[in-house]
Length: 352
Ligand code: SF4
Image (cartoon, rainbow, N blue to C red; front, side, top):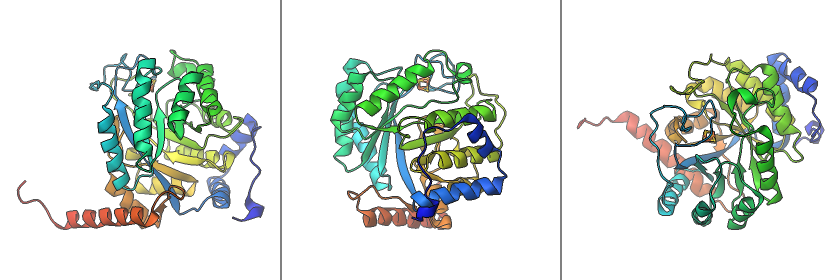
């Protein structure tokens, strides 16, 4: 790390300062973001997480982007809470594919107390495989957050989604303050925070600045900051929203990197719609975490093989999970999958 490049970690960013970063010439912004990135991270490593939907659909909330809301007819099949054994199987498969973190998501307003023994058993089972664990279950009160922390949950995901000003256009069934309280409960229980938002929901650049301001001015920056590009799903209120210019997306990633130098900035939903060049520029802007696998909760995610091919082209390696992970084993798994992908493209299935 070059100490002269290491910026101070700040929690007092003004909206004007953040807006000024967004307004920089693109090359200047990218250079600044990449310089901050290199001061804190290996620029050629990307953390890889896998996401598993442990309970799909029928959510009572009204988030305008979400196909899982029971209020919108999106054709999504609702599913009951997945059995613990099935979750562990999925986690084993994720580990074999090179993931180091396993994220479990349930479409709930908040977990009921009867759900807690199931979800804590899932956490313990996934941890026992040597994976980092993350959950997103909706709002948590203090005691639920503590139960999850006691079970060994590493991260809790709860997004702010957008700026406080634009929030009411997107969700009416829970307030911004509700979200901040859940995040405070997660911190109080000692878990790491995964918190970000969604862009391309019809918001202005000032709203993207407002979202990043909220995240960067938390008493501690979230360790993981997912920046999602809206995936427009038929039947949701945002299905016909205009596309966000990819440069506006890249600027959001770059500003997030500058404001939160030590956080993992994650390329999340919407990667399916991005070409390889946009994804490569997002890594250059300081993104250093992705979801990997065939599904991102209910929206498509680029197939695992495509991710590995892109990593190879860019000389990116998956980031190892601290000291517990056998890096050589993980790399061997990736190499094995790359070889299989190459074989697949050389042969075709004559039986089809
Ligand atoms: S984003 Fe979460 S809380 Fe909102 S409708 Fe979807 S599943 Fe429910």
